[in-house]
Length: 316
Image (tube, rainbow, N blue to C red):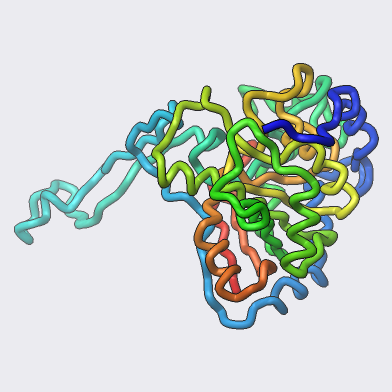
């Protein structure tokens, strides 16, 4: 469906300078917007916990090929229990344990993961004006690695449930979530997006996948439209995430095909949570009639990498 108030490409291009946080936390800063998560912010998040109820926001990582996961994660058993089923010693190593191997390209459209600040570039630079060549095939992400989040990302989260706000099942592919959706959620649900928050956007696309099955990426995807970027900057969010890959597809702009990633990461230093499962947490919010809660995200402490698979936990 046609949407009003979509910024022009020239306006989106202006966001790289207009909404830049380069130098805000020092010229050598590699953490970016999670600097907004101060000890006071963590205490605010903890104060939202009333019941101790936990809800996972990660999709199960599947090792079966699907049409929307061309780079299927790989898993095999290095050792199993089959040789020990009789209880007899049958291994020359005599070590009765099962061990696994797994590998994956987690960037994509099915694995729940965080993007560190080394993941995207603009005009030859990444966050804080550092040259893109600091992320190399030989050394990996020597700047802005996911290791910067080694203490975890723990903050208050707010959920914008767009289908609930609009009274629909899901946002259509190719259509963007607009700033009015976020403002309407604030008014209806009684929260305000604040500095240091983790802003979560449910589009219903995962719900649609669960109902109708996976589709090829060429079918498109919903996500936040670039018009929401000024709000990200003005409110000072630390991270944003959704139940999609977080950019509208097919791309709406030629020069900046992934504006949410490119502007958020390279200009603002905002970390991104891709492909979250927000179905359970949306239900938990409806049951409690509150859309703010604590979130704990612990990226793997991977050396010189551009992100990590994660299992974000909402705590009510």
